[in-house]
Image (cartoon, rainbow, N blue to C red):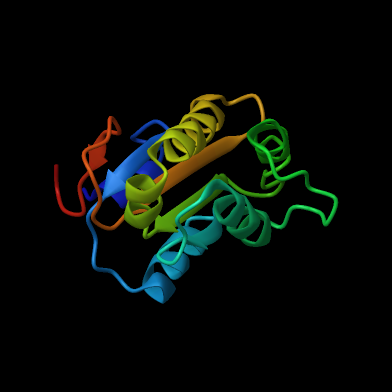
Amino acid sequence: MSGLAAILAGHRKPGTYRWASALDIADIRRAVEHAHWAFVSLDTWQIEDKEAFLEAAKEALGFTDDFAHNFDAFADSLNDVTQADGEGVLMLWDGWGPFARADRRAFDVAVDVLSVRSRSSRFGKFVVLMRGAGPEIDVPEIYSHAG
């Protein structure tokens, strides 16, 4: 069973994972939505700082216009990211590497905030799949194929 299928089927705990997959975003969205999960795509290939990351996250996750661009507000707002009628929310984070290389401190805080949310079931299931190359980070890998 692939890592994505294991998550969607509930055989793997929600969390934040690195994911080396070449699947098209449309195919991932279809699989996620077919399993009754909400899908969010966060693309940060062109992002290298905290402010730009938080703006991209605000847009991708549908935060309100009064979202304060700081990590405390990000953490609080993530608690509102739920799916009332489904299994959970899966966020595909494409292109995390440029941000990690350019501003490692802010990147580490962003990953920590996402990881805390993904490990908590209090606000519903939330999974982050970090796709793309980047520097070495302390985030477990989930495999595209059996494993």
